[in-house]
Image (cartoon, rainbow, N blue to C red; front, side, top):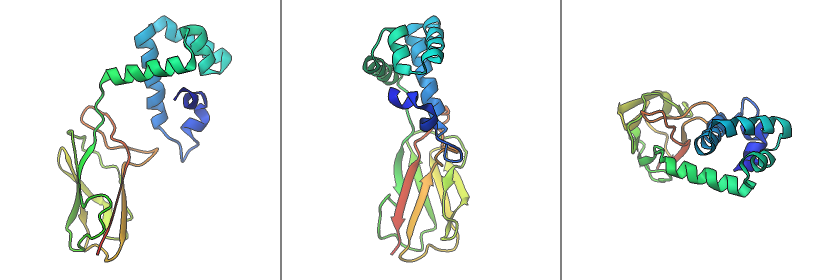
Length: 186
């Protein structure tokens, strides 16, 4: 939303809780303006924005669009760009599963696209699952080996991606959304 972009300091956040994805959103908006209206309009928008400090006012002055019209045009531009965001197609055990055997040897996630080999996952590391035992079994399958065995009657919470720090990415560099993964053992 344009209103979010206007409040950059709150949208980005304050380290260490900064949301570095805000840079991607901001650059997507700049690419939209340049692609749809040209480099001269982009420059004029940035100059006017420096003067007004109000994105909606500058968009109205330079692009001739209301905030709602600007936002609608930006959304249309993003849809037309056709960027595929990698998505999880399978989790073993399934997210939310409540009857997982404690003798499971590994947990695995499959994506719908080939992924880069980087590891970006949050685990507890005190309950049998630790990020340091994570690996890619193949370009689409991410695996975390169980150290010992899973704890009985235990809630496991993992995060695929670390908000504000890193994300799992496809081979083209498109980031997968941070995905929580929860399950419970018997």
